[in-house]
Length: 200
Image 1: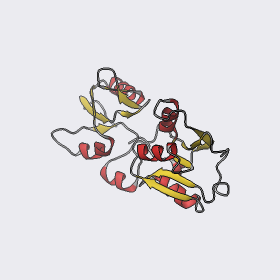
Image 2 (image 1 turned 60 degrees about the vertical axis):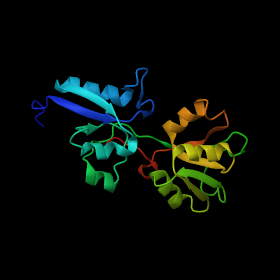
Image 3 (image 1 turned 120 degrees about the vertical axis):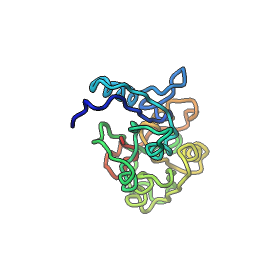
Image 4 (image 1 turned 120 degrees about the horizontal axis):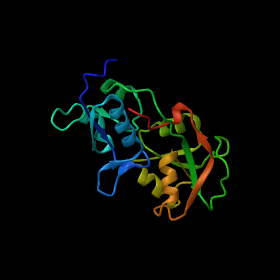
């Protein structure tokens, strides 16, 4: 396409998904997606602004003529609903889904037949939830309103396992909020049905 007419691009992103998007020391967005947006602008010789929005408001902000943006650079799953609201690029990275268990659980691997009857926390309304319900039919899937609630359920021994975004879970496991309670079990799931967040 002819990009010579583009003078400036207003990118919107989130600030709670490190290392892709997070708030820098001055509060402005930084991370892999922000760096990529700036490189794109350099490549086509356009000025570039990057503003933060809550993740759940990013697509709505594209249609806001006063405070909106021209493009979103964040990890949005290309669901049928999202595709009706925006055009998507090809993905430039894939996020693995992972299982996490308490370190004292004795769970060493995760297969459908090994977790029969186990309680698995997941965020409601996500691809991770749909995948569990389709592939782990003998487990008890417990859905939570957000990732923080699902992680708390595992930390507080309300569930046996947690299934979710492997990158976000790695940051949680290595941060102070996990209190060293838990660890990854089993390998990563790269199947598209288990991936939650992809570039939009």
